[in-house]
Image 1: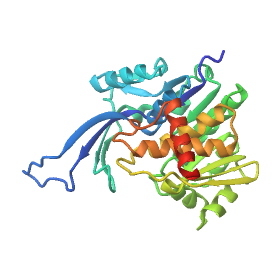
Image 2: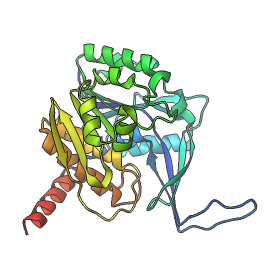
Image 3: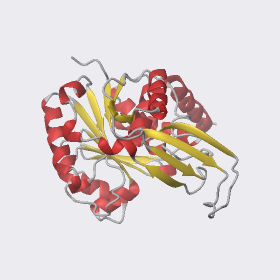
Length: 313
């Protein structure tokens, strides 16, 4: 029985955003900054929040610590209507934390994985996850967990759900080619420009996405402020981004994913999906915090109406 539009599997943590800090203090030194704020963080969690704000029924599957931060995240999820019954509480680790410095320029991070390190794809209850008509997965690490991911996506496909995946950055630096085997089973495969070039070995995005089109039927590459490009069933569609004043780029890619998947789950064509994705990404960077600026459905449509009117003038 499908009781959710989407189930999201992946990382969730606290983001502490530090404004006005351009250096790490020396031993014995104390620095005062302009402001510190706390937000829900983690790529999968930011995607889930952004998708829920657009009116999609979302459930989250991950691991939180048995601490105040974990309770804070559950409360924020509840505010957005995200079902948290699939979230496991760790008895061994605290909730993960990421401290972000200088969100308006080149961000730097100090991160503690915490309970996120306990998430194992092979331990996910797939019958429970298949309560969603769509499943979004993150946390792919190439050969380190490739077999587990392959097993999960094959079984999910057999259960009749559609799947999207954002691979994220390969911190091993291997950029293992086994990702293309995984791509064959994914309905919407998302990555950013740098990741696409690394995985394919191509020097241009158009070449990279055509290369990936040999394996995946629906591949999307995010280009930051320049928009995004998608290849679906051999047809290439590129759309420019919406110029905005960037305040915080944290979670912009996850917000794009939410907008694009909102369009996909609503049955829209690729052009409309790209439009939704670019708009959500633009609105995300316009506010401090990874999901603060992401819109609800009416805000998304109002933004697009305003942009169309501006272009017509």
